[in-house]
Image (cartoon, rainbow, N blue to C red; front, side):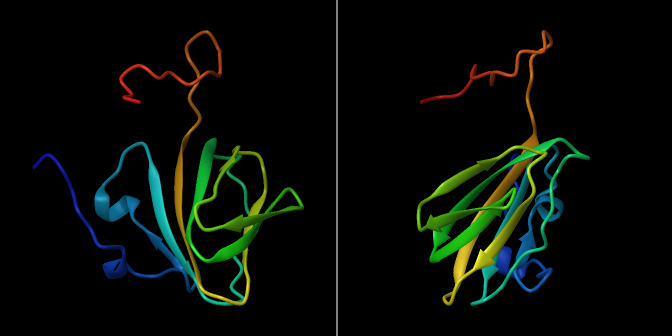
Length: 124
């Protein structure tokens, strides 16, 4: 089979919001999580210094705040936020349900130590 498919609603929920999809999809280099956040829900503050993963949070429904290194970043539907591994982050949901897609992967650097993304193979 050349693909794997899973419905996030069929994946056990963790911390009252998070559906971790990497295990059921058997991903090797990317983490994907769907977070359906009830009103007033907060994630635990954390960073990814230990594993070197950068993250992108995409808010696909509602409004919420992501606190990055003590700086509150207001998010509205359609906003995407990039986070480096060493930054502490926490989702703080407001008074309505919201939904995020969270994507994480190791930071990419070429062999010369240049931290530019390699875009070869990516189509526009």
